[in-house]
Amino acid sequence: DVKVTQSSRYLVKRTGEKVFLECVQDMDHENMFWYRQDPGLGLRLIYFSYDVKMKEKGDIPEGYSVSREKKERFSLILESASTNQTSMYLCASSRQGGNTDTQYFGPGTRLTVL
Amino acid sequence: TQLLEQSPQFLSIQEGENLTVYCNSSSVFSSLQWYRQEPGEGPVLLVTVVTGGEVKKLKRLTFQFGDARKDSSLHITAAQPGDTGLYLCADRQGGKLIFGQGTELSVKP
Image (cartoon, rainbow over all chains, first blue to last red):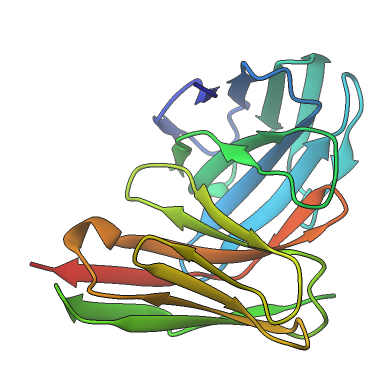
């Protein structure tokens, strides 16, 4: 059974703190993604990675960075958390292949920044 | 930049009713995927459609892809409370997905 896990389901942090969100997949997928989900806005891509140590900016990268040191692990970093980063964060992975490949999502981390 | 518009944004119906939700794009879809996200979980792929005019069925769910590949619909027959969730359409652009804002469906027993 394919699985994407995220380190926390709920997280509460204070403004200015450094926040790490971890994602691990067990499917040997090349691609990994970080999205944020806000009501009425759908999912918006923050960063993605096609391979170890590679990263590409998505649509809303400002205020975030990522790290991919191992194929199975993709970390999202908020260098200095702000209240407007309160959101649901979703990690996903997929094979590197054709145009119909499935993205498999983790359960999400609901982050609140006070 | 491609925009995906989903309608309606919210839908609340009684068990046993039929419903249709829509996804429209400002440009031609590359390949369209429909996902369902249940409360507290990540989205799960329901179907991928690629060819204009394509129709796919998944039990009580029927997915249609417009001939011009700029619109799609999802029809649910005899909705059940287990169908409750957020329905998202997405277009694959290379290795990335562009999502619509979703339709929040609530089916009451």
